[in-house]
Image 1 (cartoon, rainbow, N blue to C red):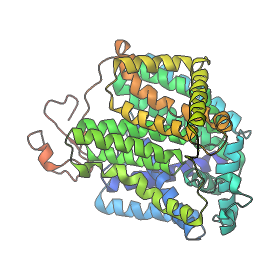
Image 2: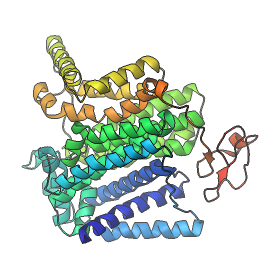
Image 3: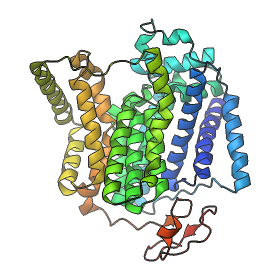
Image 4: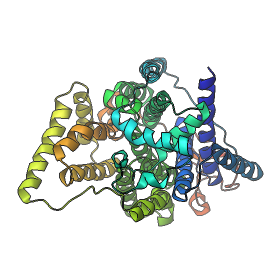
Length: 473
């Protein structure tokens, strides 16, 4: 029981760290998605501070993180920046039953995690780093030796997941593998309720809850999440960033782009693929914002992942430990063979599996009904980056496909469902409800002129009434 209390304290502290940080820049969101963005921001700050400490050879201490929470909390008190949370349950009874049903697969996964469900990569890459951090207080220089005996642990990978595990280990008092497996399960739960949150306005409570139940039971994500890998974090970063990008493009709300940047930074600090997600989503947002003549400064949030991960990239580049992911030393025939192998592997996985085939059908119908959705541009860019990784890898492509393709593609599923369900589920879903505009969001006075109240824009979260928007107060 005490371990559960300690873990709860650890997670609340990280959430509070992120909530306070976003409150200071007026970028907190609402509802469950706001809570998830807060938590993502907290993990990003933990990863950034921890990475700087590792780069500088400074021993990490949980007290430093709690000190940062206290400083941000004191500043928030002075500035009267609150971190209130309001969650709204669906009124539909069936939707509520589906949400309750989600607890069953996640609960069973959590129970199995207590018996240490770590997969090989989870143990050898992310949890190994966390155990060294716990025992040594940092990652010593020996760990980063080029070609050293620990090179198998991907010494160049960023540290978001290992540092969160280190944080949890300190709270329970031991580098327990079961805690790392449970942390992966919690990432999975966060992803599931994020999917529900992003879909509620898009397809209604019932379809959103049913989709969340499907993701909760989707084994290619659940297995590797409880196995300790960072792929579930990439899935969360991708769907969260896309939703916030859509919000920003629809409203011109700069705070939405900041929250999108937070999710992108989370992905970039979790795994190498996160940089590709940041380029794809950030590039799509910039292109579409340019077409819609949004002011460039509104997109500053999309630059956040690159600023956050830059010190780590420079550090690993200087040490010469960054693994080569691409090679151009291929003949045309070799490249064609790899392309055929990749296409065949994807086709076999998607169309030869009972768990993947329904998803492929939903996504296919969604593409046909809603091909202009901005998210397809970002997802298309990210899938292209994935394909290039397998086509141009310096490693054996068959080995790489066998060991990683299933979980890499599975991480795209929640975002693909979010983008496609608006079209595929349209006949079964109510029209989305208009949303209110929040004064915590960074809107310009000139953009609000003629649209309602413009006073007290720097207030503490009061809603601004906007003419013609039902539901605003």
